[in-house]
Length: 108
Image 1: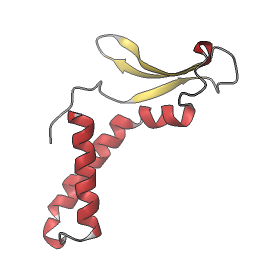
Image 2: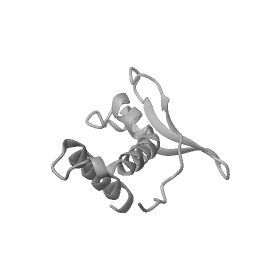
Image 3: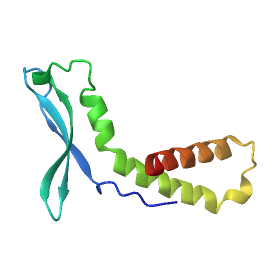
Image 4: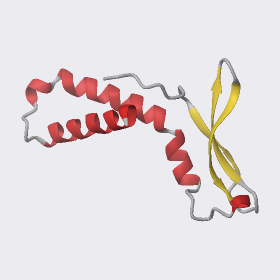
């Protein structure tokens, strides 16, 4: 599989519980060349964006690099035992779905 050009993990969230006007949850990463860097602001009440994602979505986004690497590792392990998996098998279907999802994330 192709390696993406995304900001390397780990990513993490920073922000409050969204109880205050003007609060925000940001997805951040510590970059060797730039230090602490905000990758995205997921929610900002100051902009009256109540329809945007909140904490659970921000945490999911922040976990994306870890989920990508874990999924790649699982795909590798399953492929090592591919001779035991039939094409209609649920494991085969799940494997193909995971591979397609990674392609979508890496190539758009």
